Amino acid sequence: GLATRPHFEDQFNREVDLSTREHREFALVLIDIDSVTPTSAAQDPAAMDRVHETIGRLLRSNTRAMDASCRYDGNRFAVLLSGVGLATAHARVEGLRRQCATQIVAHAGKEVGFTVSMGVASFPHTASTKEELLTACVAALVDALKRGGNRVALASIQFQVAP
Image 1 (cartoon, rainbow, N blue to C red):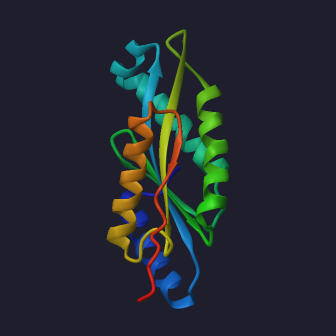
Image 2 (spheres, rainbow, N blue to C red; image 1 turned 180 degrees about the horizontal axis):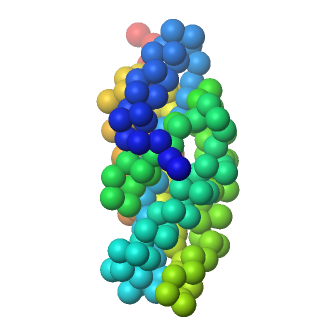
């Protein structure tokens, strides 16, 4: 039920163009599954499919029609939050992170739990191009993972010093 990666990329390009023209912000969120319990479930493709389906359902129920979300690759998902700044994006995805941490997925008679880490960046505050935004978002996600996972990390806001 999530957008395909090519559709997401189109939405991403449109959002950058629109935000540049109208001087408004939007947020990019990268989500990575960082823990699955029991650990044997992480090795079971069917169990991971159930986890992916659950994340997709949670993304659909926690985003608006104007937002876009997709399975980005492997265990990574991406979300565009249209017209949303860094602080609002953080509040929204923190709620989503908590939902993931408390979600139980039934598979093969077992309860499978999972946690996610998220990196959040906003345009134009943390980056002024699509490539910079993606780089900043990946760096924030890596920071969340390095700090133990099951957390949301924000990209740094770039301040320019006046001459």
